Image (cartoon, rainbow over all chains, first blue to last red):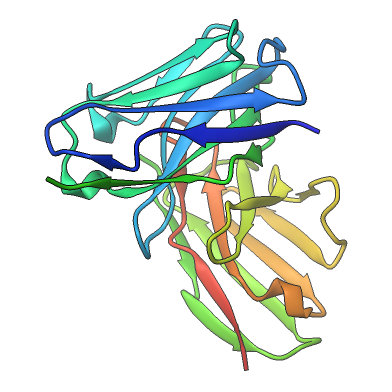
Length: 125
Length: 107
């Protein structure tokens, strides 16, 4: 079955750019009716959606992160990626990648149905 | 942004109990509401989508209801593996937002 696996640095310095990748296996990243997203969870806190990119062409971002976030897909590597610039301590979290289905203009109606195991990122000098 | 408010934030229950968790949206979201279960150190797992549709593979003791602004997740007959934190999430508009979570603990 479809599996997602996050990868990236465990430690990032303040003001630097965090780069994370999610590798898709057991299925095609290019299926036309699917979307790929990132969600994070600070230690001991709840879930925050960051961004989603859909194979239909749409890209969606959380406005709270302003222009710091970029999401992209590399179909040749069966990966999608997240870049978060100018990181601060509050960006310390477990970062998850997840899949959702695109239908009739909505990218979340059927929920985030496949998740990676998560990768811990700490922002510290 | 649409704010999602869950209640209670935690509860204690016994095996076999019927448990109900409430989620309220700050504006109408029709049935664009999903529920997740998260165990410590694990990724969330989708239980219910579109307010009341059971995700494939999820036990039938889980059920969801509601529309508009008020939603509930019910666990009928609490099992040992159900002790976890539960989150609601709206998908009506960007940004997707989650409730603060409800931790279900053993009484």
